[in-house]
Image 1 (cartoon, rainbow over the protein chains, first blue to last red):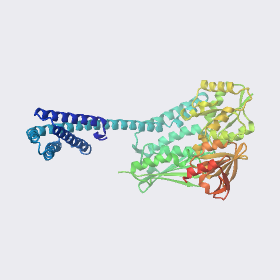
Image 2: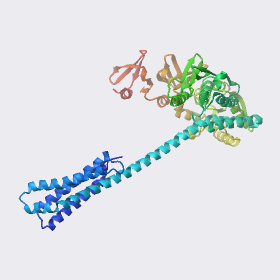
Image 3: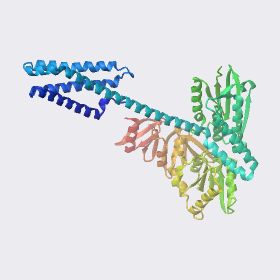
Image 4: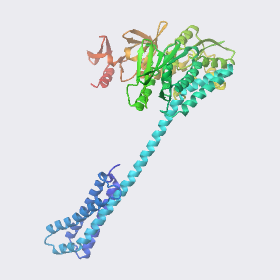
Length: 345
Length: 248
């Protein structure tokens, strides 16, 4: 929001009003028979003073705007400046043109009329500015709301995109395409698995708590699909203590970790890849460990270890406001991702 | 008989190509490979006419594999990359199949290949141009893949000292030794991170973290002294580039 005094239109209007005030004042003086140089000076001084105060008020309104329906303070401003504009100018003129008794006399006659006029001018300017600011506020608020809507939509879209994992999806479809011709029964099974997997992914709301056992089922589905894709190269082992399986975990938290481990294992080595998932209860918290083989010589920065885990670390931090929940370590040829999930209640 | 090799890390992805190829009795698939290492070996050994190539594969990508080849077969890419990421292909005489692809789309690609290459004993300029222009492979990975005799070596760009022009090759100097790669200086100049690698001379690209000081050599020419006290020449233009980057 910018101050109204930075608007060109404001200055054009102000100067127009000022000229009108000067003209009116001059005409009133001439009505009283004053057509002198002095009446010019007085009219100009009054017009300039009044409009200066109006600009001052307009400028101050940028910094201070009263809450709705508490305009007493503004009224006091207007009265105060109307008094100053009227009496100050009259006083100064009285000092300068002390000998022009006709002028001083006339000014005294119209003084109270001028006071009212000054007040009306200042009050109109104040109201106009208030309206302008209110309108600008509403406009800005709308803009902000629109921007937020756009941002929300983008976030939602990127979430969807991530959930659907296009690379995984298209490669799976490609495998199904191959199976349809040669092994239709297996193709059917894979379509079923892929559908179950996608349904689970789409249905879950973010951060919904489910039991580890439930999440493991989902992971199994994912692994089954990946095993069809990669054949004998991929194997997996689950080693979960029974008590850990009942603990709660945010839905879809482990799947990206597993995906990362598989990608990392499969793309950084050419050998068979065994993924090991262990879970246990430590200090009443759920600890899940995922291990994948790793080749220190390959060094792929874009598909590499840490890359896919950043988002997971961020999510854990947002959920639990702790930074110590994601831990990774390199153990010779094994990459270990360890996740701790605090149990609320 | 046309000889072809199918390279993809997923067995079923290879199977679908083989299935579609049954319609082409004059094409014989002489090998199937599950990764780029095997791919390089088989292509050099068997010198096929046509290669079906996946992009995301273990160890080295399909692009990196192509860079290592002396024998240049025609290539049809098959990938699950989205269309946006693969727009780079559009200007080149290479076709790509987006997985999953239909028999019809496959036949289109074969048609394009047949009109472009078959029977013409031309070098596969499409692949050459494509590799020369698409710097995104090396820079995106922050690594350079080279062949040392039969072994494939992956050099992280952080380990480079400098790159030296040498005829049709470049010499890649690292603390572990010098490796040859058949690429141009311009290729490396455009694909390496320009805030770290500066072309200081017609024949030299310097990794600036390796620089310790500059010595005046003759009027207007300098020598860059590296951490391992090797000295390489700096041209006048190279000196002003260095000054600009180092902020002196």
